Image (cartoon, rainbow, N blue to C red; front, top):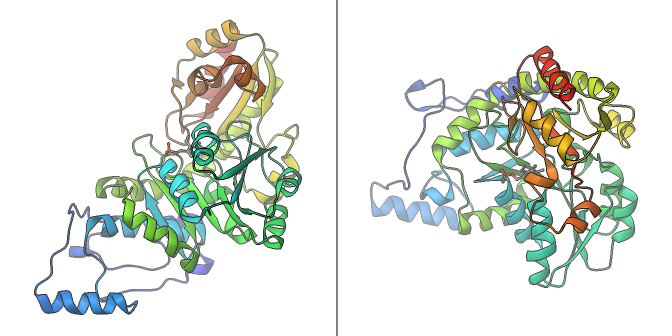
Amino acid sequence: MLNKSIKARSRKPSTLAIHGLSRTPKAYYSVSTPIVQTSNYYFDSTTEVFEFMKAKSNGRVVREHEYGRYGNPTQQECERKLAAIEGAERAILFSTGMSAVILTLLAYMRRDGHIIFTSDCYRQTRDFATNTLAEFGIQVSLVDPTAEAIAKAIQPNTNIIFTESPTNPYLRVLDIPAIVKVAKRHNVLTFIDATLATPYNIKPLEMGVDIVIHSATKYLGGHNDLLAGVALGNHDLLNKLNRTQRMIGAIPDPFTCFLLERGLKTFALRMEHHNNTAMAVARMLEAHPKIEKVWYPGLKSHPDHKIAKQQMRGSGSVITFLVRGGDKETRTFIDSLEIFLITPSLGGSESLVTQMAMMSFFDYPEDYRHAIGMVDNLVRIALGLEDVEDLIADLKQALAKI
Ligand SMILES: Cc1ncc(COP(=O)(O)O)c(C=O)c1O
């Protein structure tokens, strides 16, 4: 069996996204990864079962697969490439980004422990922190998305710091080395949901973070056609998460893994396009008289622009802004867009638009919604892969309708 090692450490993201760190043998010498659509894997004899079990109990691997919930070759190939792109020893795939977030927290949280989250974060992560974890008696603090606020919130029982970077939707970029420094001093684990950055734009593991999480539904899949999540880190630390995953089995099916791996082949190209397009659109919006304020880490006006410049290759394709006016003007603008689709999510080939208060936070009481910044004229766009001139023209014509 061939296992040709390419000089992987010096390879760039576009090469790693296609080949991973090495060439793995494939059935029938197929160039694309076969979809191994099976729920279980047979043994030829009871002797083979015995040898398999004996080796497993001694921590050795004589063959990889046994039962679908514990892994699948298509999934494994995808995990191998994701780990290579991230520069991680190991990747564990999940059925959604949220199952990656929640199971990672469940695997490492401690009874009587305390977890720090940032106040600006994906709505379901916020709900899990403030509702579910609280019900289990886990202490939770939601703090400003800055390293200083996180440092201040550390308690003797803190064992996890969980942040996004950039955060959703205000795109706050955290000073990751500063957070890691505080965390190491207090023996606290650091988890970063870097969905909005991707490993193309940020490398949290290189900055000392323990586990990186992505919703692979977004840029990694890249085509608005699958749901998946991934957690990445070093081998020993991820053993515990792997045990939790094997029990619960929130895994993507083989076809989803095939689609995700297929999407990865254009990952670097797509991210370069996203970064460039969004920079041009953010500049246009910032200069536009119908726009009150823009949040995009690549703009000098963003509160974390300096940190973003130090830590990120580019800022991704999500832009958040306030339309001048209120609910009426915002809805007129959104309804006038011709290319953008009104839907949540981000990172795919189609450009998307969301009025945050209406789409993601509708069921929150209005006062609370406003207090956390989800005002009626707050819009988040996620640029796709369309031509930048067409996107700018579409935004301009819709703003002219207000
Ligand atoms: C930052 C972030 N994390 C996690 C998720 C959840 O991902 P999924 O929808 O794949 O569960 C999202 C979804 O939008 C997100 O934006």
